Length: 264
Length: 248
Ligand SMILES: Nc1ncnc2c1ncn2[C@@H]1O[C@H](COP(=O)(O)OP(=O)(O)O)[C@@H](O)[C@H]1O
Ligand SMILES: [Mg+2]
Image (tube, rainbow over all chains, first blue to last red; front, side, top):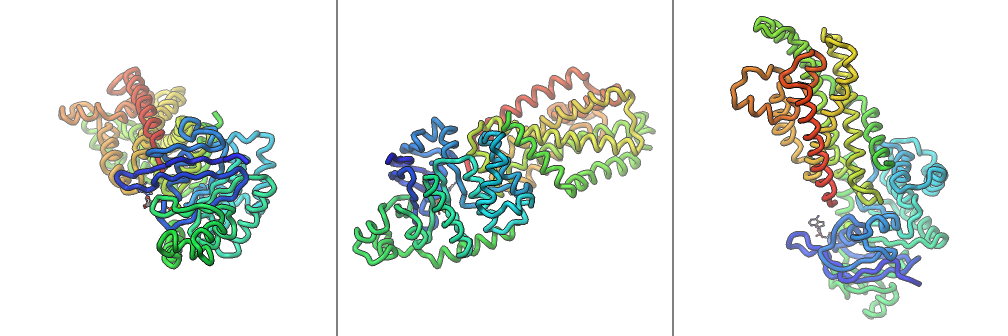
């Protein structure tokens, strides 16, 4: 199997602050891969560099065989992305958001309607296609973002904390659906999370990230046996030297959710 | 082309959907036309300057255009705040086309707004001296709109949040409006002010509208066109450069 993502010594500095520090890893085609780490670890910054939104300070990357800096448009065609924060146009309907994406990604005119319907049905939003997105709940918006990210048939989908602030039922629903897609269409899934359980249940391989660095990577079993731990939580504790601060980040999530609601 | 087209359509849809915004943004021009038009009319006439409403209407049309256009450009800040900007920035299309589409959309919206104000001014007694020139006036409204939408885009590309917004309002839009000769004639101003008015692109926009609607202005239509054209081009280039540098 070939590598769809190859990263060597990727580094990002914001002024004097080292947000991502010489990160190296590979993701195989068709794999489900996770970045696990606390808030501020540098997960989103890494994704932004991989997806051509940020210029790295140093290091090399290859996505689907292309260089994100020199071949930005080929790379952009290769991936779909669901950002950590919402990225829909609230003043447009679900269908219009999808249509906008289809045109930007040059989805063939003859396929547009069919594909939009297929993916909206996939995430159970076809009945709501003509509603303005601002009327949607957080979970519905997430589902729409996932449908949109998949619309142009990317080889990889990046999901930055896709289940943040969603209830358990919606979470399960999303992952069942995404895993199914991974199996059927061999789409590579790259997601970030600060939930240990999610990384362990969903990802085939995990990279543990903290303070801008990848501390260790491998399958959950490998991480556990390498550190002589009982479970992934123990492995994380040994590697990072601290708990993932789930209570803390839980509180932050709630705050974020509340802020989002206020912004509406 | 498809990029320019879809961003253009988006701007238009958002505008047509926000009826409160359309109505709200007409309040100010109406107020200016009625309050100033009828308030200053007699003074203006006594001073031997002719009908104030005829003088004022092109100025108020220009005002509504500059407000709508700069706001359309500045909408990028909203898109950044609410995340939609990222969706356009990761798409496999050129940023120049994204910025061009947005700007065209904003410019058409402002032109519509200017045309509505023109129609309103007819109800308070404004009459163009030659009706066949109205389409030409609309062309110039579009040029003014394009200029200030590109200007708004350039500013917004450098701002990451709404903080700077009030600043722009007070230190850019208001001075541009007041120095443009929208409300008063450019003749006989103190030389310092007169110089400032010459650096305000809106001056030439409003002057062009006066030439077309009234048959007489301060500069010639040729000068107005050259200034508007070159400044618009400059802002489009600047705007697309700054937009291409945006990181999120
Ligand atoms: N544009 C930016 N300017 C300055 N610092 C930033 C910027 N973006 C992220 N950071 C900082 O970089 C660190 C990593 O952020 P991020 O990649 O968002 O972490 P994560 O996604 O793992 O929570 C954080 O400390 C964050 O404050
Ligand atoms: Mg993050």
